[in-house]
Amino acid sequence: MLNAKLTASSLAILAVSATAAAARDQVQIAGSSTVLPYASIVAEAFGENFDFPTPVVESGGSSAGLKRFCEGVGENTIDVANASRKIRENEIAVCADNGVSDIIEVRIGYDGIVFASQIDGPDFTAFSEAQWYQALAAEVIVDGELVANPYTNWSEVDASLPDADIQAFIPGTKHGTREVFEEKVLLVGCETSGAKEAMVGMGKDEDAAEDACMSVRTDGRSVDIDGDYTETLARIDANTAGVGVFGLAFYENNTDKLKVATMSGVSPSTETISTGEYPVSRPLYFYIKGAHIGVIPGLKEYASFFVADEIAGPDGPLAEYGLVADPELADTQMAIENEQPMNASY
Image (tube, rainbow, N blue to C red; front, side, top):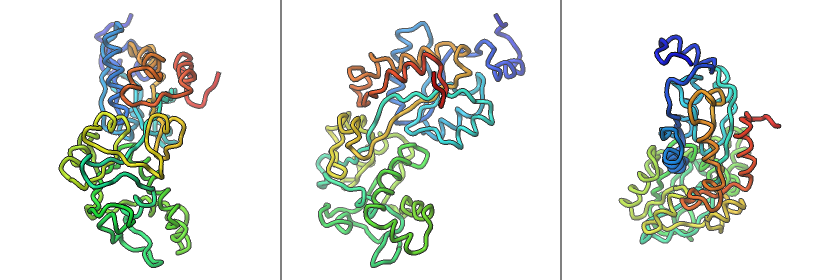
């Protein structure tokens, strides 16, 4: 066995080649605030049931977690990145440039983004993507012209909505949740309302029109929340007419304070999310640094434990917390067992 008192420089060289014994004995994880509660439940149970230390789980957002994940290989870098979106091609390229090549993608299940307000507040019970686009876009089409968003009241957007000031609390740009909100709500709303087509007709190319569709107003009607959903809930508590974007699991744990709205006529639930009927839902992931398996004690065991039927299956504790079980969980279990990198098959 290697001497535990190797010099720092020796450790760095050996760790990069992924052949050294670990200089630490705890799995280190960072990333999505949406995945955080699930990972924390699993990490605690793992520490209680295995002869390995409890993994260290940090938040910070999907992009921040993946940035740390791609910094390199070695005991000074994290082992797992949690994400509420797939890793991007440019992130994979950064990983590769820094020697992180064997990336194992683990889809843990599904979560839905819901739109909730004070349980005793205005009657926000039904929304469409187009209504959210009209309420929050930086610019909207008015009388055939693209102008700065003039709407200050939800009833100005649509007479069927409550007579209440527009005050929305949405995820900040560092969270994977924000990307899903922009693409599955604002962009879809822009398209269904005809605004994107109108922008193209005005001379914008497709990319510029999409960017305009997803640009959020900055006049105070929409507020970015950089923290987790507890901060969003605190804002809703303090604003009677506020509407917040939450994960389904968080909402289900706060139904005594919040009421949820339908989106395009579909109520968010574990069933509508797993079938894809509810339009604003997404898969959740974590990414494993393959080079750290066998180097960092308990890494593979933690990953296997996370996606075990008893944990991530429909009757497991994560489902009780709101995670929608992945129908293809067995494939994910096999990928971890085989240490199968992304885009590889056996």
